[in-house]
Image (cartoon, rainbow, N blue to C red; front, top):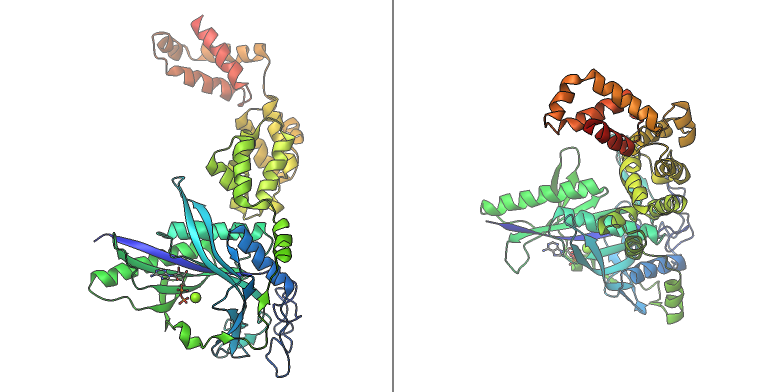
Length: 478
Ligand code: ADP
Ligand code: MG
């Protein structure tokens, strides 16, 4: 039977406020355990939560960016459950009336087609603390620094049909929250993570199958692998006549498999009710308009502008606007190499991206700055070096940290544009290869490339390619 995969993601993004959502404790990452948890975070009697205005502003910013409805009236609810790292015995979240509802985002698939993914809701909530097992044999440590850190949970519609689509969607949300500067997007530190809900159904069926939820995936690669594993596991069960059990599962990256964690709880198990310590959150138009006015150019807008202004394909524009930092880098190169936006795009997307990737360096820490890369490209544009030699210069710039001109001079890489010098090299090559010359003249046209290669070799790749082609043609005719 042919199966269809159905996926919905719940993404947790940590809001980059300075203090927690209901207390004045710091949210800075990396402090010694339990030094950033005050009486509110610890759920002491006689204390009351106070809502962080900045967290509200950030949630609204997100809602506006995904074209969602911003609730003028939303409510905080208690979600009750026991966990050692949840001192109050409940998590403050939003349930029936979330601050953001009914939005959507567009993703671009591999084949270039676009697809809209619905976002059911995005609500504000507090994070729990952390249970630490590593390095503590036989005991569990509790660190409450994270307790009370503001999150938005972004819940998608079950609109994705493959692991690749799910990753494309998650990357798009990641790009967006970073553009909006509401989340640092750091996945290693857990600031951006997701739960993947996965089910399968016979292709063509209009009913969803039973789903499982894979908790806490904190890398794009894990999301893809965990979903693919889970899809195969569910199909196996169904094809051998079994039933998928609705449950929560964990992904084990070392084994590349998911395993059962607990059977799925229902919403009513949590005994949600409006938190009596917090007033309903009421927003007026003035506040929402003020937030709207603070929105930056959004990723899709920037990509459309790049396509139009620089003549880039939708794909290239998408890659170059994946982060604001990358887009800024690209635009600085373009400004310094006027009239060559495609050359700049190719170099940023190919040579620079490969070097960053190879050495695991972020664009903001690139060893070749935008100004330096522009310096190199200008030497291609003014014919000082060929594109091929430029790659060699780029490598040297990357490892030595020096600029293009210094390296070109030092290594004597300037292109040979002197006609006489190129002609001399051609003559020598022809004289040294009489057999090939005779064959060429007898009609073996393919040998043209052989002669080009030989002259390039003789000139250490420095002959101007266009001139070489033209001069060689003339000589061979003569
Ligand atoms: P819960 O309240 O248990 O978290 P929700 O109805 O809020 O459940 O859905 C949680 C997520 O699961 C959403 O992202 C939704 O799109 C997704 N989802 C719901 N049903 C399915 C299904 N059958 N297959 C895959 N994903 C699903
Ligand atoms: Mg849920």
